[in-house]
Amino acid sequence: AQSVTQLDSHVSVSEGTPVLLRCNYSSSYSPSLFWYVQHPNKGLQLLLKYTSAATLVKGINGFEAEFKKSETSFHLTKPSAHMSDAAEYFCVVSENTGFQKLVFGTGTRLLVSP
Amino acid sequence: KAGVTQTPRYLIKTRGQQVTLSCSPISGHRSVSWYQQTPGQGLQFLFEYFSETQRNKGNFPGRFSGRQFSNSRSEMNVSTLELGDSALYLCASSLLGALQETQYFGPGTRLLVL
Image 1 (cartoon, rainbow over the protein chains, first blue to last red):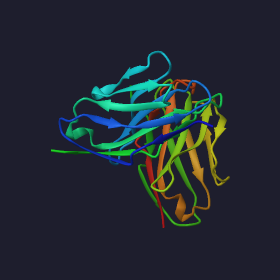
Image 2 (image 1 turned 90 degrees about the horizontal axis):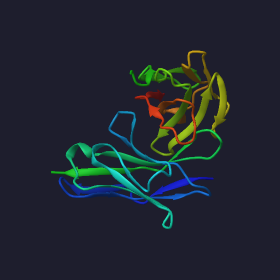
Image 3 (image 1 turned 135 degrees about the vertical axis):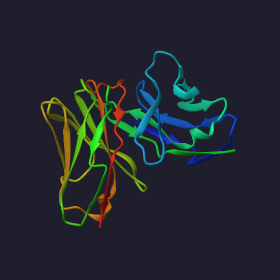
Image 4 (image 1 turned 135 degrees about the horizontal axis):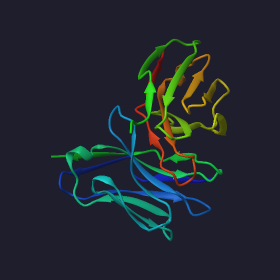
């Protein structure tokens, strides 16, 4: 079965500094990987997705992620954090059951200080 | 295009009661998935519907059920509510529910069981 592991439950950065949220995946085939963000009391918003077209994926709000098969990683980065980036981030893999079934990581809470 | 809508947004029930939650997908989307989010278990897949048929089901007891109507709107029902059913229930829609498609999430229904 496919799974994702988010290596940090909390990440704290200062505004204007880089963001790195780490995710490792486990999959027996070429996976579809996603990063979603959830702001307090809100639903989930897609940041970006990897579907084997390109290993470096650019998303919304300046986020990007690089798929590294050799390291089974899909880390999320942003060059400069903004206060509005403070939220919970989920790394997600689509399980290969024939039809879409998302398997979520445990989430990383990003804290941004002024 | 309007996003995914869920009603009601908040619900308070007592143990033993049953509850029905509703989800209207993005216009044109035919696949609807449901997820449960709790602090302890995180985000877990409940089931997925396409063309009024359940194609995929997660590891939840039979008290959790759902259905989809011909207009793709979906409902989920939880019977004999337990305290542990308190959660945020999220609905997501996509065009066909294919592996690489993006799922678009609604704001969720927050259920509190007393």
